[in-house]
Length: 422
Image (cartoon, rainbow, N blue to C red; front, side, top):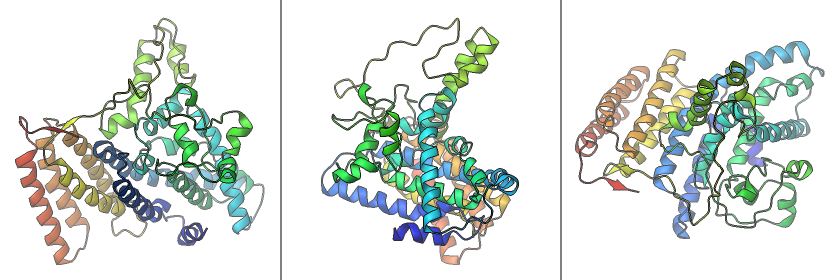
């Protein structure tokens, strides 16, 4: 509760980005999980998927700025002209009501996201992770947040301000972040009966047939029990999805299922089927196309997790650049950043450029060598130009850039006899 109140009190204006406030807390929990997994010798966090998840999250944070702008404009218009309650007082009780309203709406958005093609395209990147840890919680979609905000507008009609809705949805998302772990088994039965717990959410991520399309609740599991979508965790959960993107590239992760739908739409003989395909249930096929093959259940015995051969000495390089990526992201999304609008757009581009290159390193792509040699000085030049940093920081960034260029020249070239898997 103290953490919740702290976050609320930090959000003072429409330009404040709640995600910039939440980020340090998320990073802290991730470091804690890494430490506990190491201490208890639990093999639940792989390097490749974690870096891909983390990179996807950094890039996706840039879209939250656009979502916020849209929320304030569209929701602001609805609130100004159609609200039912004027001067709705915001206190602990009304904040709680707003939080529960967000949770109820999100249950249905989440449920539709598993049953309607275009909404599954937006949501499926999160489910393409084949592990369960806090890094997976970060593996969201660039279009997921946008789709969600299509449905929260009734809260503005009631009388809740757009700034409060955006803030509470961010807090709601953060508490859902905490469900993504295997380190917490089942909690006290009273908590398990009312709230969504890590056990409940592990079921939601399962591809076990008995777990498919279950446990959509993010805060209260009561919604699933009321509407018939609850399933208890009773067997080992197998994580993933039945159409994996087979890539660490954030573009492929984010738009994999859109490409599948687009191909079907192009191949469909009838124009009406090309349109309604996007809004039909998963598994529906346009007339004239072959039916989808029968699913074979993924089990512990037949699951083959996606893994790639990466360049040598990849891990220390990407860990260092993950830290740099956090700093770049914060310059883009923080409300009090010294960067202007134009600089933030360029920074967002450079951030996406960086995380795409990470996938090239993880997958040993031949294009990575030239691309990284271009990206490093380009990013350094822009950061130094846009920022007013102290002399030691400038020297530090230049030194890291030179070291990164030398590292790239030595280790990130094809052919190499030292490619490793891991």
